[in-house]
Image 1 (cartoon, rainbow, N blue to C red):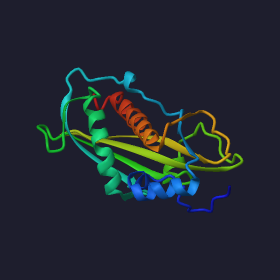
Image 2 (image 1 turned 120 degrees about the vertical axis):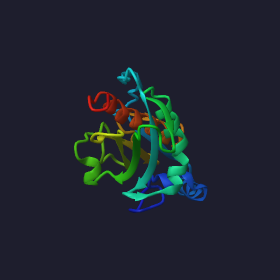
Image 3 (image 1 turned 90 degrees about the vertical axis):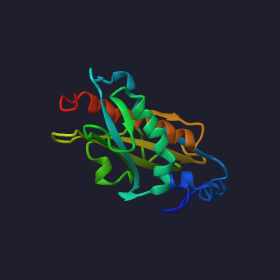
Image 4 (image 1 turned 60 degrees about the horizontal axis):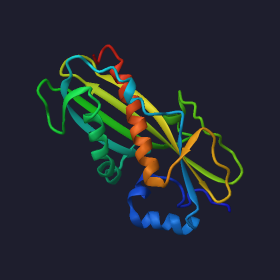
Length: 207
């Protein structure tokens, strides 16, 4: 099976959320698409270095597609991101409005092509590309920016990949197969955010 560039099988988060587009993907692939989450990025929650006296923070989240705001994806993932930040133990409370002290945590997840410099710079994926068959990969870059009430902002980034194969394409190496695309996105988001938050927690400027 060959798939022309730009075909609807391409994994894009907006297609995950739009039911009609998702149905079109299934119709095109005959339901034979498989989704894999790169194993090089993992959940690092257990490694957090939690502050002795955590402070409250205002959380702002945005999902982007190639750097452009994607409101549907933002609305879809915002509750999960908020819940994960609240459960991190890094902050005494997490609000969507201003908090005493003025601390702000900005979380951005940008869905970018694997070839983009924004994704590939400084990242080595555990996946193998160029295998026989049809494969598409979506890169995700998470940028966490913590702005205390006073002082310089602390910025951390993390990268992840969801890899999709169609038909008889071989399975990618060093990747975890997801039950479906929703499970893949859920796992990707959790691991990606936990990696960025872990880096933040170990920065002396945050503590």
